Length: 408
Image (cartoon, rainbow, N blue to C red; front, side, top):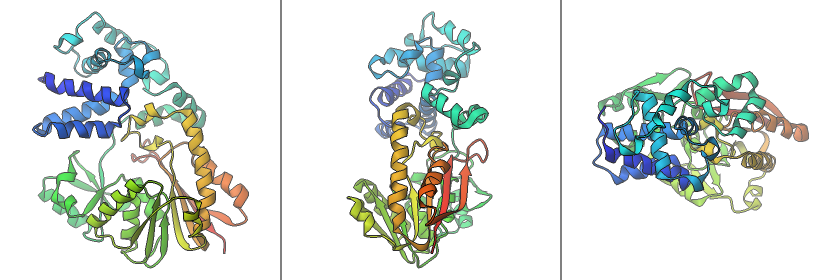
């Protein structure tokens, strides 16, 4: 493959943005591609895939490049020279030769081959922080290496047909007409899996609001809430509205769907997406204080709590998250999750149902949180069903959900 120096320079600059300045990988990559609109499809794919792979395997290639492992995540010690070495190690592993650039010459090139087969700490080989290796081994035992291996694989792209406007079969044909090949997904009636990764946001089908990009695991959460047209439903941690829009479609645009979040900009983005999807039964509400929750006490037939979490289950899509997360932050999130579960569950009317969900895999964020809640509220609530999805089993993102029923 012919290497264009300009393209590699932009990869180096993007990695510096992600690791030295803390910019989210998807934003940094998107920004760079917008800055170079004349790049062809091949260059754009090479740039994006290479950048994500280096973020995903950063610690491993840092080690192969012969750099001190103790410095792999120290922002103040990062410079362009080290990033070039990391990229060169990646290139040598993938193609078996040193790149033809001055920044990639040096005796350290031999280090890559000698280190590749050497014994190394599991955290380095899995390319994760030490604390995550320890936590994962503790919570998953022997399953952890294979689970983490699956989390280090790129994720497939799934679409959810907007059934308010089109059927999945019709969407599949429409996309094929625009050069996007897809397949139906067993067990997910509204889902399509792309045969080849493509930028579907430029298609007319997307602009017409015929689908949303949503992982297969995420598509299982809204149906798990068991909503029906005409109900009063609350999505209490709505974010930008991915599951909110799915709930609206399942409700056939009938009834009341209150979408709540603590960030106004996320609700604004949800409004924009709702207009494109033709959703009319959603009422966005900003959570300003505890009164925002108390006003809905005992009024909802269904409540979805897709709570803030570590995001371990979706690091295939957000590989930089594992470098930003810390054990202290995880402890803070677990405390917040229990607080949300206790306070927001009061919105459910007697006989109603609540789904507690995370895009995490840690039992401490999932079933243990539900058990803790039931230990103090079991006289009022009962567990009806749990759902657990893992990339090493189903091949989807990692998700957990528990459906609870408030006793009449």
